[in-house]
Length: 335
Image (cartoon, rainbow, N blue to C red; front, side):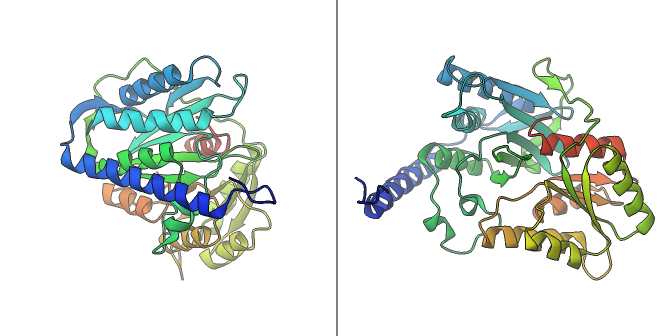
């Protein structure tokens, strides 16, 4: 049913949202009744199996699905069957409505002391950022419902103690969805690397990427800014968090990625990113990726950075080739 102006009837939209909510609630109740079938599986094998499941569902009339593994794999203890289905749902969602000759759907994995991350490019297309905001206010979800397959995927992921977050990709690209699995799901590093997928290439150029760089040390700031500009990036550099946040919130030149020091005077990087994520949620803004740079790299430091909204953590002194590779991975939508 449509209104006279051609839009969907608001009552019908509300009914559809309520039906989806009831189905997802029922699925959640069923998961709580049925015990999780935990088993050990490598991160790479989990993603490869999910990709094969999605390829089978999509058939030949869809963009190719590629898998890339950015860091050495790890062994997870998860309900692999449910998690594979959730990841396959995200890949299918990313492929919907796209031409078979379009750019591939890339599913990239990485692991750190904070847990394991699985990023599906293009999967955030059409999503209201408020539906997956990391800093929600009570009742926000009611105004920004997910479609059924996406809501079920989130239910499956959250049943494993994980979360799903939306991240902006490079210019002209649809947002990515990032599935985050907690540290307690990671049991040990993998003994042998899977042959599936491809290794992460060195991102030698960052042409077209806009980096918001915050570092209180003037020498470090100058060196990093110069290095990134030589790699082709546009860099907006600041020594303090407050002017960096003001620049971001003006929205005049939205960066593709934020790279921020943690220990800074007046306001540290944790506080800055928390404000950035809150501002994005308040303004229904697609969150940009963020990299923390710190002299501290204990597992609790990496976990704290993730909790405050960072997507990656690099130890000082910064390996510039690693930083360029990381920025290239996020701003080009693939590793």
